[in-house]
Length: 188
Image (tube, rainbow, N blue to C red):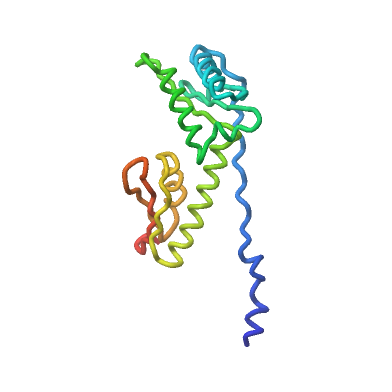
């Protein structure tokens, strides 16, 4: 009887294989932007990168009115990304502060990315969320994730909002705020 059961089951490698998540199509942002704000962004980042001894090239696009996407391009940009994107987040925060300083009505939002880090991080967080949700439903135990910034916590919450048997909430105080993935027998 034991041999019969083994024949009906797929080999372990086949069972475990899931289709790899398909990368999201890169949004065509069109031509580089050259308005007043984008020039301020370029000037600030070129100066900052010079001080950081980085030869990265700055490309600025306006994704929608008042929202700019900045891509730092070049070789070996790991130092600009930093551990878990912390340096990149700091560069982004400084850039936003610099270009919005003193102007209340004409504010702009700037997102800075290097080596497509933000999209890769988002995909890895979504994979982590699925993996943790599987453990939570299997063992019916809550799992507390590592501390994350607000955007990363948002990615986890969004990825798991429709998953049956799982709920998420955040706990703690920044910078040590964490997501808890909890078993929820009511949510089926």
